[in-house]
Image (cartoon, rainbow, N blue to C red; front, side, top):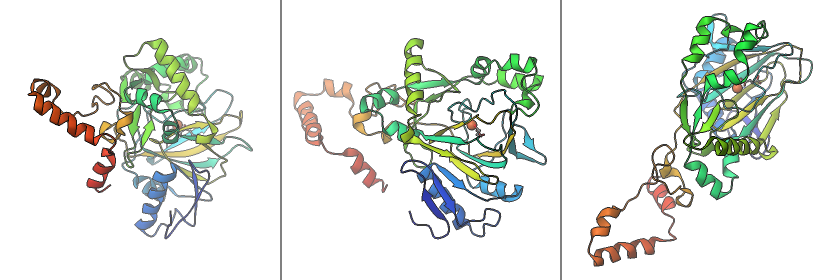
Length: 358
Ligand SMILES: O=C(O)CCC(=O)C(=O)O
Ligand SMILES: [Fe+2]
């Protein structure tokens, strides 16, 4: 893609691009932001070096992707509730060292994340991203069809219990510089308890590009809805393994003032925890919460699951009233069948897309 202002160099054919020729403290034209956005939708993760960005321009950048959000448990920098700090020191696991999409326990997860390195350990502390769009695309058609018919439960309290969170707070093992420091009080505990399970489609359309993307992750996804736990566990384990394939990954070595923007709906990420007991501090923002949805009409016909209750509750739409057809005179039934037989092999999706001007 050619850009009038910024320079964008892909890091892999699938995911990640290095962006240069831009000073994020002094963006003089909205066209620059538009180019950054277009590059983000294409490459999922954008990397910038040497951006000692001040809070105001950082917030201005973040707002390009929608309303900025506050977080359930990350503390924020003074005077700027939109800018969270993720700081870690010591040996206790930060719990971001697992593959995840952020805050999918919410009905409307963040669609874009921004992260800037403030203080880094002498070595280590890289972050890795996986393209869940590429991961879905590379699945066999039969598996795609199965997943397109499934929804999954995402559950914050389930995860907090599973990582021994409450006991770790009681024992004082979570505290100090830990990212969950601010949770160690009654109010925050209630907040966890008040997050009911949310159910999202297992495959969603990207909210901007419409691209199909896998939407289950190893931190927040508890179970496929309505599927026996044994099957659900096995399927989830298979998918959590699949998203780790190096073909879908990009790994970034941070420098002080590196800044990364990622598309939370098209990726998962993993913060490599290899720097204990050193300190690592980052400034983070999230923007543009959106409801994860699947519109079955966007799914190629040959991939649509047969069940009408598939996906987001919206199954493949039948254009034939089968009950009326069954009761129709034989000549009418024959005519309808003849029309559909004639259409067999015609790419109706392509015709529909052309008609809609896509
Ligand atoms: O620390 C990192 O590199 C990423 C942490 C993380 O999971 C996040 O910011 O959502
Ligand atoms: Fe995260």
